[in-house]
Length: 118
Length: 116
Image (tube, rainbow over all chains, first blue to last red; front, side, top):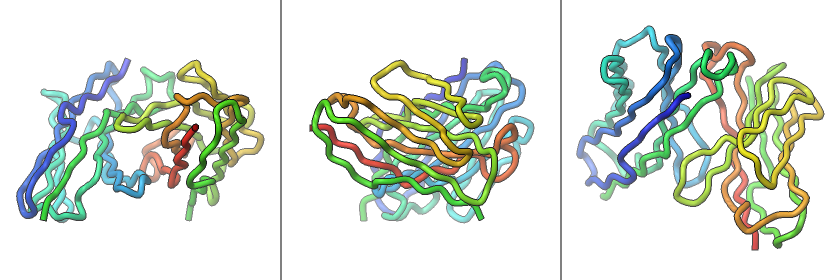
């Protein structure tokens, strides 16, 4: 069985602060994929990043960066110099082939609500 | 390019009334299709997924059903809505058999259902 834990229910920061959203996962698959999605107040989920289990290289995209560590089963997301527009619910997700019969059904964490104050 | 359409955007329905939410995907063939529900303040719960026409897998037994009458059409239904069916319903698609193609899962804009 797969499991994704986002222990932080809500984070509140002031604009320009750096913030890290934690994601810890559990899976028996050796091949799996990790995702981060952003859900702004409008509701639609916006894809941010996908990482496969064989690529532990950290990634940076503008103010966003992701730290994937298989040793601790974590895939954390950092926003540098946060802005009000970053306010949203952020979901971490995991999908693996073997544990879902090859269907790669994603398992989502419960989400972390980020509030950035001006 | 691929697009996913979901409607209606909002819906207010009385308890006991039927429900039909529709989702269609354009620009791709043979997609995997998913219905998720997000209750207020909660995470995403997978309700149904489909790997082909007429093939529906249910993740959670409940008052809802799903159908896939065409390759790129996915419908979520209920014969009699309950108050607990209120929530935000999201449809999604992915490339069948290989999510390494594209960007994994693409979501529709969602339907906010309020059962009164």
